[in-house]
Amino acid sequence: MRRGVWVGVALLATSACAGPETNQMQALAEQYVKLVLAVGQHDADYVDAFYGPPEWRTSAVKRPLADIDADAAGIATRLAAAPPDGADPLVTLRHAYLTRQIEALRARVAMLGGKRLTFDQESKALYDAVAPHHDAAEFESVLAQLDQLLRGSGTLLDRYTRFRDGFVIPPGRLDATFKAAIDACRRRTLAHVDLPPGESFTVEYVTDKSWSGYNWYQGHYRSLIQVNTDLPIFVDRAVDLACHEGYPGHHVYNVLLEKTLVRDRGWPEFQVYPLFSPQSLIAEGTANFGIEVAFPPADRLTLEREVIFPTAGLSAADAAHYYAVMGLVDRLSYAGNEAARRYIDGEFDAAGATAWLERYGLYSTVRAKQRVRFIDQYRSYVINYNLGKDMVAQYIDARSGGDVSKRWPPFTELLSSPRLPSGLAVGGK
Image (tube, rainbow, N blue to C red):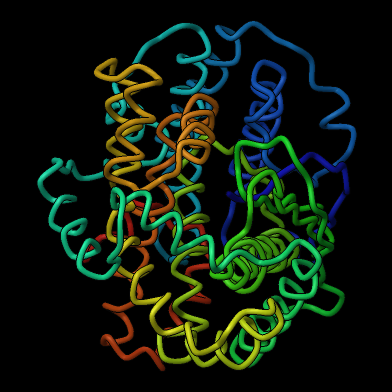
């Protein structure tokens, strides 16, 4: 997962509204922040991070949803009446970003008021994107390949479960393994990205969550990363979580937004992060693709063999086979979207969604139930992980010519800008 929590930390911009931004734009941005906080009074998951003036949060009251929507509509009208002049591309992106974030806020307010949307309608309204549809036959072809790799008795799910159980990080080695992964991800990131002095995060291990990991951004370039230990943690999750939640994922994304847009530009809207918004697709997509930016497959395998597997007390000789299997399993990721789509659209009940995840996602029963619990809480948010990754990958590779050694500059630029998901498409603005 990603980040969040509201820590009231006032951040003063070092540049008073650099560029041609008007006082009106600043005022609209401030009103938007306060509306996000107001929605948070109705939806505990909505405000994922806030590090603006503490009094903005403490003064937020539970206003009627209709009043919030009316104010949001007013902001949208004033934004439409004052388009940017195009002199500064980042200002143009800012205007489009704020306009679309307001639209998503209004959609979430409507949902909180009882409006029902299909899975695809919801993802478009909230995240500015719609995931492709897949039928069971597409997943069956991947399952057939896995069936050849995982020989033995029992169902494919039984065989996969037994296979993967051999790659669990022992609880006593979890912290050391995770720290080794963080160190590797940080060193690889700092070789390509200039981060401000003092950036850091702390790690906590928690239980009873619907997610596997979360980054709660605190402001002042600090994060709290929580790792859920409800279920056994497999060895591949060490680097995945270290990159996704930390370097060059959510922590770096938040730090660069704070430095580039809040402190350098003085834009208040980036001091708040509404979870159910287009920003989430960019955040999750960059966090997931960032794993491959930091460690292309050959580099990843070397790191696993030389550092991660030994630290976890596992045989490095098994690493190549493990990642060959997991590479195929990754091609089943959209099965999770289909489970969520059919569950939210009423084609499946919870038992049906669980069975689908077991069959086509190779989830164990306990993990499938945890995933359905996640869908209950976050609904169409699931598209942000795989569709977000694919959209970010397409965007970055189009700008790097497909050369993995040239991914870092466009990737860092994306992390530092208010680009929308619809702007990731080839030719998108």
